Image 1 (cartoon, rainbow, N blue to C red):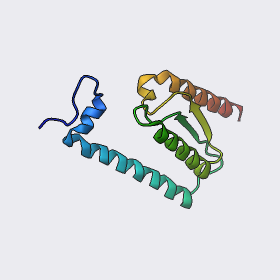
Image 2 (cartoon, one colour):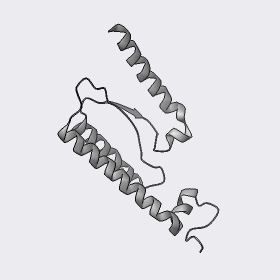
Image 3 (cartoon, rainbow, N blue to C red):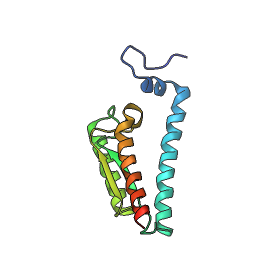
Image 4 (cartoon, one colour):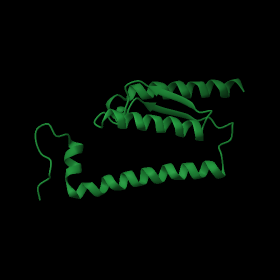
Length: 128
């Protein structure tokens, strides 16, 4: 069985998605992502986080550089809306130019923010 998409300029992800054996994995991934979001939404209705629980969320400019810009903008709007509704006091860290692959491509861009959060938390604990 030959994949539907072939050629020199075909990314590995597009190749894998063109293979019927891998398409069900993509469907499963989206299904479980939606399930996770639904679970978080349900939990926040019944047991909101304590105001003493610190929440930090790291987002980028886009979900994926390979999808159209209007879809990336939609994802960004939905992320922002979700944060505003679910965790209005969350510390929102926006990394310019980042997408979902940033943690693999340039982990230092994310780890610097995580280090800063850890240092802030440690300093707060020492002062208490």
